[in-house]
Amino acid sequence: MKISQKNKLKNLILEFIIILIAIVFIYPVFLMVINSFKSFREVIIDVIALPEKLNFSNYLYVIDKMNYPQLFLNNLLITAIGIAGIVALSSLAAYIIDRQRNKYTRLAQLFIITPMLIPFQTFMITLLKVMNIIHLSGSRVGLGIQYWGFGIPMATFIYINFMKTIPREIDESAYIDGASTFKTFIYVIFPILKPVTVTVIVLDVMWIWNDFLLPLLMVNSSEKTKTLVLAAYNFVGQYNTQWHYAMTAMVLTVVPSILFFIFLQKYIVKGVVAGSVKG
Image 1: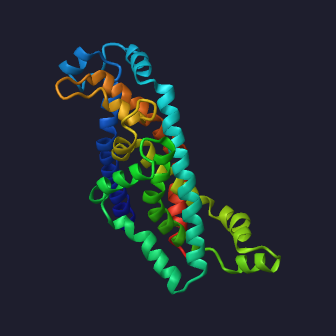
Image 2 (image 1 turned 180 degrees about the vertical axis):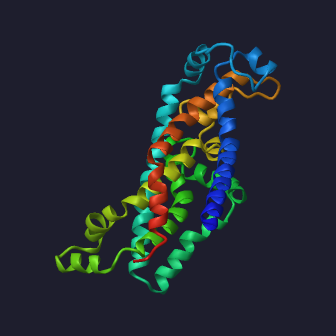
């Protein structure tokens, strides 16, 4: 009985701590949302107070000023290209590395995963020069392709861990039926990878959609190629910041990715946990 009471007390304390941590993370988002409905005067007077009234004119102004539909399509195109390449290349690479374990695939795994340890800031200037030479800078398609290089290492690492849980007998059965290695992967193995694929997609969508530094380097020179995050930054100036518009722009920028994450969050835990148990 005492043990049961102690467990209940521990659970209550743990729940309380989790709630406090959640509040710490949610509160800045709450401030961003409420300040998006305020006038500039209200924001300056008291940033944590609730708005006197819901002022939707901020949203109408920002949507028009940012050319929101065009920038939304830019984000969508860049993210879609990035995700498609990351999922296709990393899943196929993980399949070959796991199923053909030899010194060459081990070396390939080392070269693919090692870039996770290299900070982006150490080579971003070199990257910018190389992208200019091969004409991939200043392009939405080029920016999407560049995300392949940054996203594939982590995605391959996740896929390899999950691939170990898939019995090799499945491959052998497909080979007996006359399927090639590529067809076995496409029609047999890849559908089994659905949980981890959704995990990779959700994590990378959150990253690519809200990324600031790489778009700033690559597509900041033209209004037609800018992303939502870059456009939101336009409301922040060196001498004058339109805080009410900046908060509104940030809400319009992050809400799509947050909704996407909420809708698919259950698959993240499922995909990560599934890859941690071999059987």
